[in-house]
Image 1: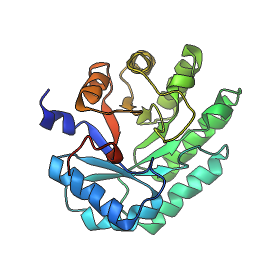
Image 2: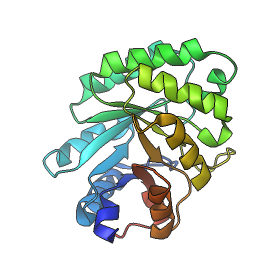
Image 3: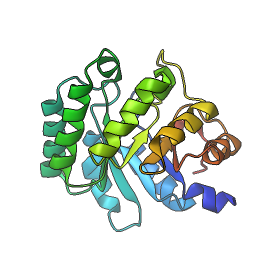
Length: 220
């Protein structure tokens, strides 16, 4: 895979960082455009800045309930509705699942929030979770619920830094590919320090890789 082909598999983001200014957000888009990256992930507060780049062949993903999620499906659906009223920039949404609540036996809550978010957005919805913290049985359940509720894909980590959560490995990517059955997209996220790390994630089966622009893998 050439570098140019690899860049088309990257989602460039700044949201795992603590402090994001309008200038940071503009630079995120400019960096994506300069490198042929086709998708960026931003927070709701940056949506108006993103509108400046709607005609620049970059799709905008907006995060919901990032980074820790919330156990209330209604709040997540309301956040999507608020984003839709605030701006037309979102092409899709990444929603953070309350993974701890799910693994405490509340599968019905996860199913409800998936259904409500998809119905509210009427655009592709992806769910962010922490698959490195999941046993195979929970990961299989998560993938099954995602497929049943028309979730477009699963992001395998918030990649929030610093964060005391185990980061997904190449083996974790292979695990989720097994249970997703190629019916939903798998987006790798975690700690990537080089293009080689990104290529390894893609080789393991990831459809896309979320990259923090602060890691300086992608040149300005």
